[in-house]
Image (cartoon, rainbow, N blue to C red; front, side, top):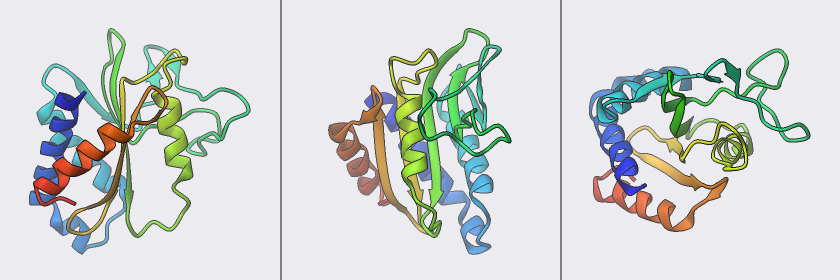
Length: 169
């Protein structure tokens, strides 16, 4: 998993090096998410990188009943990960990324819940890895790594250390 996380670090590094204007103009999270996805795509050769992709093959991604669900659609059932690294045709899910601006004052629990669900190995669409990024103007303010439906503290600490080593945290 560290190899995949290293690719995320390199994408975040390039994102901050080239996209400072987005923060200067205080543009929205969807704009930031799209631009970060561009840099992720460069790192994950042979994989597709999409924003708000809520399918595995023909099936919709949905969290189980009785859980907090996304309000990104009118039914409130489907989940829309901010960025995914996957193979559409196979289908195979590698990395799910949730992105937030540090200035977003909405509770972060919704994003954490999505990543717990997206990486839960008991669900049919599980991603191998989930990454939560809270982006400040000049660096990542906070991050978490999800594995097996929960925050993996060891990988999270390693990832945060790598971001810090590159001046991104």
